[in-house]
Length: 128
Image (cartoon, rainbow, N blue to C red; front, side, top):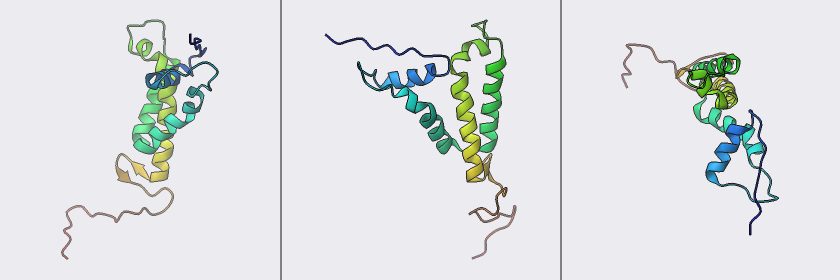
């Protein structure tokens, strides 16, 4: 007979626990991998997505979800309330990695100096 597993989750940890549960529920006396996915999942999303503008919009939308009224489950804020902290962290890390990549809506920017891309002149044709 297998012993049951119960992880008490607060509002912050719940979406990460649900992500872990889609791959398998840990057994009795195993470490809860949801704790490690709290930082690793949003960070790897930021590495994959890495855009300052889209990360800002995602962060602002998630901040609105954090402060909006969650009592009406039929509203947008009420239905997305369980994943608001996940979206907040994903937006933050996406903005952060977009700064590292010098990427703003797929346009290279020069906040921290020059980029690895050549400047493209509109209408210019390379005659090599």
